[in-house]
Length: 358
Image (cartoon, rainbow, N blue to C red; front, side, top):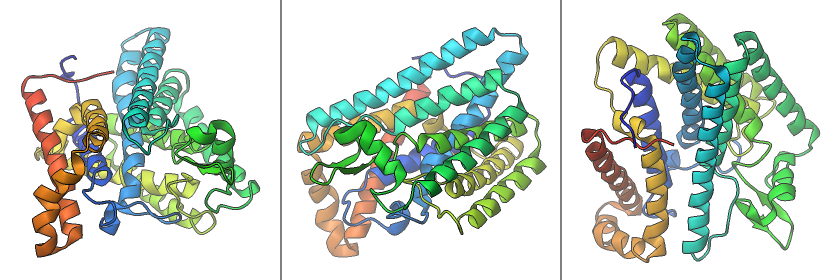
């Protein structure tokens, strides 16, 4: 645990923090059977606000690489040393994700060991984009974005159907991970993992778009952020006419659509927080993102694993809120209290200047 760096943009911490808080909100409802649609993922094709949460986080990872590594390069730091530090951090993030999955497999009765995961994808994307920052110029980075999106689109098109479990992405996950994927049905041999192998390629493109936005932010080029964000949204909408928006497959149209909204959100946060001095709402989640996400995941495992969650939900929320306002309100109230509990924890850590880093 180390003190936070004094050289940070409050807007980036705030955007990261709001994204992490949204992760907790959508990941921890009181009753999965009663969740308002904006807090659920699209069943397959399409995009809800919840579908934007993870790509927003990966986008901010790219922004953070530009803000953290590029200045050190300009100061003459050794690239090999920076790369080794980035790769070690990437491996730690992946390792923490595997530890969370192992805990779920050991504690939750219906869970199984899963190899891919959210933190695993974050670690891979961070390591890849850190390497691009260190050893590739802007032209090569843009070329990589185009190659990843066009190449992945070709894989999807020539892979046949985009239908669940039968698409090329799901088939690859099944072949590589088998019953270690998020979903696997031994009777049919079908499976799928939303954070699987092939889908990591366009996720790197998402993070690279964040890297380029981070350089625009460093240069205070607000016009470029506005134009690029708008262009990404429009291009994503147009590409969706051919390859639909799909978070599970992380389609190229979804990459551009999500990155466009993330770029515009970054611009808004920069203007209102950094330039106009508005409060950096969400900052405490942002400066302790690892503690918030990993801690909430372990809590999400322990509460049901120890038999606490169901009676807690029925007694404190469902038992009296459901008769008054309905089950959806009760489920949302649980999720909001869950986020509030973690805000209190992070507030206490922030007051003591305790920041969990990997």
